[in-house]
Length: 398
Image (cartoon, rainbow, N blue to C red; front, side, top):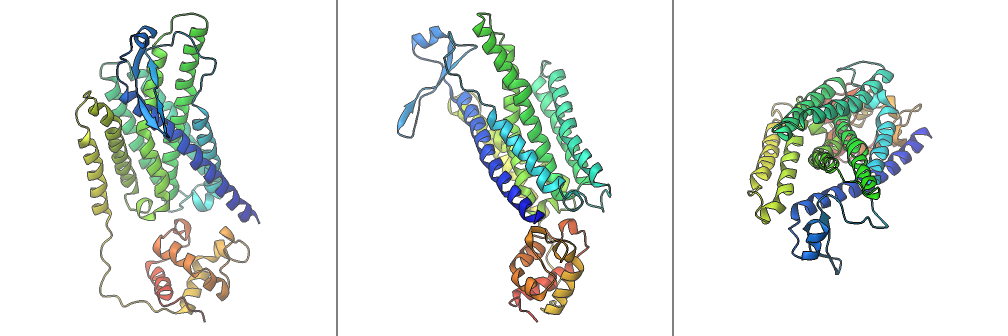
């Protein structure tokens, strides 16, 4: 029964997380597009009000005319919309999902004894440390180096080194699937912390100054803009880290940390293309196509590098024998799918149960290679081959 309710919690939290993430990423992408597409106002009245840029757009059967004030509008409107709950809800639902999916059964999902055979409590504490320590170090880098000459380049380089180091450590210490998710959660935590500690507080200071009739210090807007730009470059790497957990050929690779780093770098390069393409159309910068080509080249190179070797031709095809499959299931699967424990409500301690779940067994064990989780029971390639041959022959019972 516990597994049943955990599945419901996982489903509902994942649903909420995806919805709020779409809202957050969508608004982030829109405002990056908006900033890149603004042109100087043509109307003299807009210029007198302090408008620095405007955009005309058509959508949903209507015309829109957003404008941006250089520092502050002459008068605050009665209703001012703030963009922060998208970020906070995404992080909170994501952390809850991380807890339900990985921390609740840390021994099975978070820990790989072949890497670090620590207690569940210690593994969870270290995982939480990744979220906290990365944010602290990232924030220190931004505070110390942002105002220096070529500060953005220095910050970018140091943050990249920090991400690479964290990715390597995560893949050395945790099960591959959990490591990828943890790196994504780590960067996403920094993104949401940027909103909570820099973007929104800076905006509140600007609004407070306007209400009090005081000059608005533009530094708050500049610092918030810097963190917002960081967030947009973090977005595609985070999405890859999250989605890749469903594809074992990424996190199950012998050099999985390098796979993660390369794909995140490709995502950042492709995002750079989309950030700059609007400015290029307005003649503000060079054609950013090389960034997209670099990102695609990295992905293509990774695909070639990670391609599995062809199967050895000498070995004969394994027999499609149900008795052999049943023996493998008893040895490798009943720890989590037996009479005492039925993870995901799957029970495999009978011939009927094995036949009923034949498709799932084949997908999880042979095709996706997700099970046994972290291969904790030591299933061999030959045993996977026996299951594959049995399913290919019709998954017949005794």
